Image (tube, rainbow, N blue to C red; front, side, top):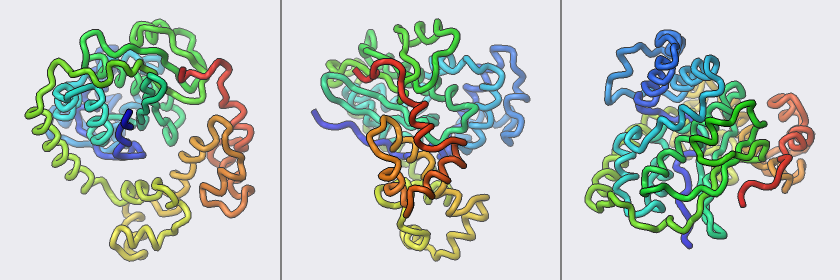
Length: 350
């Protein structure tokens, strides 16, 4: 069975349509929160939310997410159920008009930076199931769980709209402890999730993956994809130097390539790259540190790699340097963090 597409981006810091913030604010206002409080500190005002062509930075949307999560910390799953294919504009119509669920998933991953995702998804097919895995690495701790619940519920909501009756869901797992109340989880997903797992994922039967979608139309999907390509090209062009550097650092073998090589790949001098990053409020060292932290979480989960091997893959000459950096990121050693991250129940991807 052919593999599914890789996600177009590896980090959540990409420009977004303002519709995502508008949905967050509507959800909060419906639950008694003040619009001004939700937008405070984001640099946005109510008038910005009605511009159909408006765009916001990921950090602006994250500020609104943070305000919503602080006021309604257990509402992530319910919020995710509010996302539909049409929420994503032209990308959503590309989902609906795709030939099959497989094609719709491929479209979603190829144009992921037209979505509102913060937890970067990936999908794989094996042993008769399709696994949709969310990468929560790099998310700020106060909103990590909220966004994991929202994004997985949103994925499930959209997938459920593609086929009459939805795609059979086998299991749902979350990489955090079980909350006090799971009734909403059971209602949205139709089953009781497993908590305390090493990953956050949804597992579906793959039998219907290649079944034709009821609204499939080759001309419509071609037009939608062409529009997606134009839109994503404009957004990526304006995505900013920090985003470009982060994307390159996240590529295979790039962590120890050095700033000079990254500058050459971006067709600028090292001095210009340093200046542009400073203008964006960051530095090459800060971005390297950020990418290493996110990748460290992935490498250590599951216990397949030793701390020494993880350090080597992250570009550290000595394991002690990696351990020191990890304690700065997480407050504990890699071994302690990995020991606390292991699931207390059976593996979920079955």
